[in-house]
Image 1 (cartoon, rainbow, N blue to C red):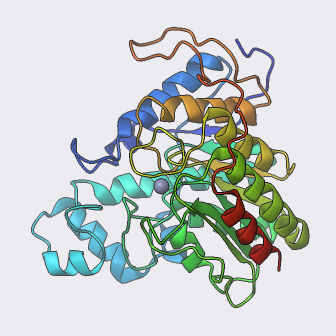
Image 2 (cartoon, rainbow, N blue to C red):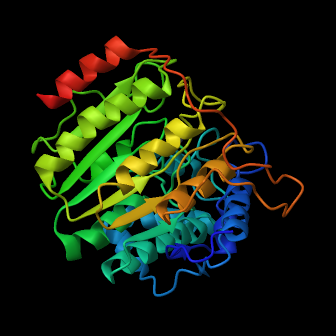
Length: 356
Ligand SMILES: [Zn+2]
């Protein structure tokens, strides 16, 4: 179907499916399995690579030794002191302990590090859909995120490209990445998300600019539509990138801002979300593309496969070969979006604040 189109280096290991908080939890590893199956079906040339050459020591650039030790111990011992776990964000609810959590979280980081190394070696784009765990903090887990693979990829790119931009289109604020690089002059972070006034993690306001003024946040009101969201991205991200002149980009492709997602209240349809991926790819900079949030199992595989097709320079408006009983007939289900402009005035205010 996509013969002749160069496909990006693509990290995946079935071991990443072990990154799971249980069957009742909204984080479903099945979405990753299906996304990879769909990508492979659409792009016969796609080479799916086990992330090799991972040095676990790279985790120490992002997380404290104490936190890494705790996760390592908890990974195979359910009796680790719960108060210690609780103090480090590992608790029932959002981010509970599970068997093998250290290995699974480390493997996700291995994937993002591998993707970054492909870009360092000259690939224009590389992908790790298992990654994008943007809430993990240096010393604690948060919001389904144990280790921050986005930060691992950024660190890798920094060594080669100097300045790196991190762009986060997830429904939620990329607070962990922002915190890890808060005073780093060489890392711009940009996150567009549903406002922290209404949604976890409660941060990501325009005044959070960091001591170097290179942190950008575009909080959207609930029910903001995709046309408004895209306008905001165009008018605030592009000038920031222009001024910062990064050598490479890490894109977190959470797709929970989609209108059908059960966790949020933004109103993006397929093509609007995909246009954001297109916008970032259009910067023409070396790019590491990661996964992230997304809790509608019917949507996430389609959106991520469409994103990888777009990143490979292909056409996402294609019919999909039947591979399993869940396979969608088409990659994109919705029609060309009509202008709705909900949340427009509030978003214009955000743009004005960011452009200052
Ligand atoms: Zn999210």
